[in-house]
Image 1: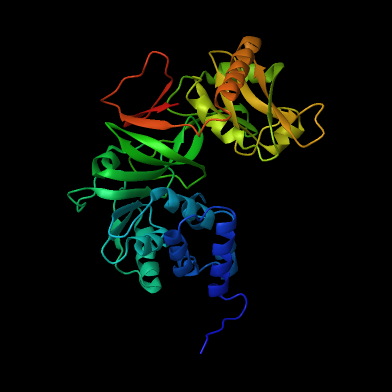
Image 2: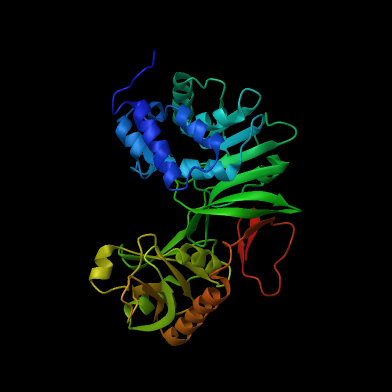
Length: 406
């Protein structure tokens, strides 16, 4: 006898979610697809309806701190899928997860099978208790849940290292513990913040360093503990316009704020984007490896309406500065183009605005010319006690690693 389910049940919603993930290209392998068809995602966010859990376009927050800031979440289905596809988990593997939402650990348990193992770690006792309870209810009691700082060495790690380390909280550094505990042929998937950008990066070992082969535009709640390094924020116009400065790059708050209050200079590049803006995420990463200092200019919609800034997307704009001037990338509708296209330009403030705008615009033009049709940027991570920068390289120095972007 065939069992039937009514429309709107978790089973139906889960099947619908899987079909949508396949259509958008987030699911590409039969193994990850099977895991998504099996894991009862709704059990990991019982506070929300199944419709919300299976249809969520973004992550669902499961805990906030005393200031109301989210500290734990279950990622959106599309992001879970893309991260697991990038991780390339296979049966029998030993997997370490940093950040214990529970749902991702269950998906990993499906992928490694009975011969593999999954250990999930979180610094927050409430989160590990919740993960342990949710995993048991969903039938994944074999997942080992540990309360610990995920940026430190795990005491009961396998001697051969973990085949996969998957970080599900936003990191400002690549912990040396992850490098030490990663098996020789292992892969590390981590949401990494650098130069104000957030990218989930899949790394594989290459000789004495890690080399990226996948970059995903994404956002995560920030990691807590020893490896939590918040960026500095220069308030150019109160809460409305802010410059995000990462990695302790020098920036004179008073001089840049004074520059922003003065007139601006515009320079347009002729570099055009289609309606999807597909080039822009790659360009942002390339610029991070070509310009220093480099960060993000963020502005509220009200700031744009008041004419304080040019057109800045919600996730911010690439920005460069010197001791008394700053410049940022902006957009406008491409002139003399009937279809929906956009032109990249630069707006600069301060005494050195024309030269700074020309320099940033020239870099955008050069990268478009040289890399528009190339593969996505490559991020290499070296231990800080190892390789030094090349003569023409812009490096991003983290506490534990040095990043080189090409």
